[in-house]
Image (cartoon, rainbow, N blue to C red):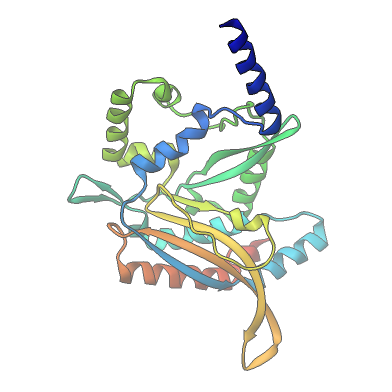
Length: 279
């Protein structure tokens, strides 16, 4: 028996040497549980292409003049917050089967990278009342959050309630009751994750392309790549930069016409370089 056990241990060590593995932690399973319990069941996606030539030019000119690299994602958040502020129904959350809660504040949830020792960690962050802040305030807030201290687990500065920090250790039955509470309480959902979400996964690559998000909010923005093409095909000499952006709506909250008007306003703001003229 001892001999067989030793042979088994030896084979396990050989397999580990050939195919390294890592353990699945509670933290890595949380996003899956979140999506299973909170993600909208009926989603509709809009793949849009927005001319950001003016905005990119203003950001480049500011960097050449001051040496400071302004946050492109922060500028998008400013435009999103303004458009949502003008069309608040897109960020509404359901309460029961017959009620929608429409919030005045636009709290934008996002993912930022932080340096912890020699490693980088992705952690959630929420820009509260982004509709009341200038682009400069949002930019400074994001930069401060990226430089802020974080634990090795990548915890956000905005610590959730104690019940949230320990829920993963609870039995499955109790966790289901907790998720039911979050689903039925829009105010708790707003407190924990904001009212809208912006993810910039496409900013880490080059060239065009759309990202398809699976979000928890009523409206989610995924920033894809930036492609270069003629701004007017009748005059192919003038080239422009176009952001590929995907917008995910909860179809039970935002139907066709309101979502279309919202996207038209957002596109107008971004094309004009809204908020950058203040710099």
